[in-house]
Structures are given as C-alpha cells and as structure tokens.
Length: 288
Image 1 (cartoon, rainbow, N blue to C red):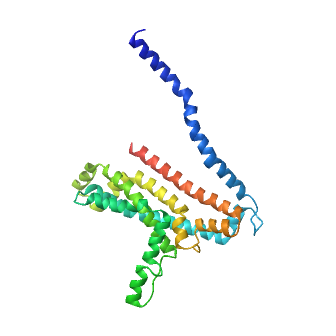
Image 2: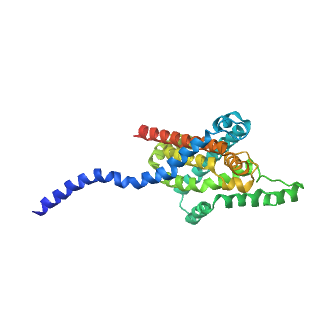
Image 3: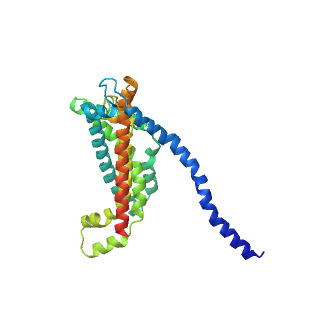
C-alpha cells in the first residue's frame, strides 16, 4: 500500500472515531455534573418543598409569604445591582485608561490593582473592619476631628465596600483586555467628524465594550448574590440572603426554608447570567 493510500485510510478512520468517542470523552464531565450539581440541586428542590418548622407550610411558600425573607431577598438584589454598576463604571474607566496609556510603572500599577484577587472574602471583610470598623481608621479620624466615632463596616454600606473591593480586580482584568481590542480607528473617525468625547464614549467605546461589560456584570452580580465570607466577617445580623440561609440552617435547623432560599438565590443569579448571555449574543449578531 502506498503512502497516500495509508494517509487516506487514516483520515477515513479519524472521521469515524469522533462520533464514537464523543460519548466517552464527555462521560466524565456528565458524571461530575450529575454527582456535584444535578443530584444535590434536585435534593435541594425536594427539601424546599417540605414543611417549615414555624409556619408548617412548604419552604417556598414561607419564603414568599414572610416579610423578613422578602426583605433579605430585596436587600441582596439591590446590593448586588449597586455593586455591579459601581464595579463596571470604575473598572471600565480604569481599563480604558490602562489599555491606552503607556507609562513607567504601568505594569506595577496593574499588578497592584489586581493583587486583591488573591484575597478570600474573609480577608476582604477583615480589611473593611480595619478601615471602617469601631477601631478602624475612619473611626479614629472622625473621633479626633469631630469627637464622634463613625463606623460603616457593620452595615450594608460596609458590605457594599467589601463586595466592591472583592469585585473590582476581576472586572479590571477583563475590561483591560477588552479595551485593548477596541478599534481605535472608529474613535478617530468620530473625532474627525466633530463628535465630542462624551459622544465618542457613549456611541463608540461603550458598544465596543458591551459584550465584556455584560459578561463581567453578570458574574459580578452572581458573585455578590452568594458571597458569604465577607458578609459573615462583617456581622451576622445583616439582612442578606447568604447570612439568612446560614442562620436558618445552623441556628434554627430550618432546612426547608434554607433550601428554598438557596434555590431562590440560585435562580436569581442564573437568570442574570442567562440574560447577560442573551444580550451579549444579540449584540454580537447585530455587530456582525
């Protein structure tokens, strides 16, 4: 058999193999998905249908009928939205600046801005306590100047600062990379036509960054919805879903309500991710 015939036979065999091997290649991922997501989540759904220890109704009905759980959900969604918007605004500005400017120490500055990526949520919460806690820098300065101790760490404002500090490095990394890929000729064309910097930003830069903004914002929102370490470090009395779930599970052994709250929180985060995915896909289709 000639070399060309051998190569042709090898190509035919290679074309047949992917179809037969596809299932075997994906089987480990499917098993992992079933074992560590599908089965636990199905169990979580089932536990949420059980009776609550206090209301004697199902966990889902308890969640939507009790004001404290609705308040916790509202606070969590509102806080996550505020953190997402602030993160995108700051990270997009910093990302565009670092992508366009070349100066001494730029790499060092970028490394410093992304250094908090190594910090877990507990460490971030501790840093907020050191900044705005009862013995923190803000309290000492306000006591010296105004003879009044200001503390923000143990409130939703402190939690906002902690979540923002946690989210910014991740957003900056993504948006710096996205800003470097923007077509600068479009900005130059708009500028030559007399467009102001505001119009260039809104009509050229923002649409160019829209897919990255959507994906980054969705991840930031989902992370803020479920972040526990920072919230737990700053105080267990905050009315946010992660701490509410923790309290129902550990303090009251109320597994039905804890499971229902977990499903609701996961559902809201999943909807945000799906919405961002659809919007990003639509944007890419319109751009094409």
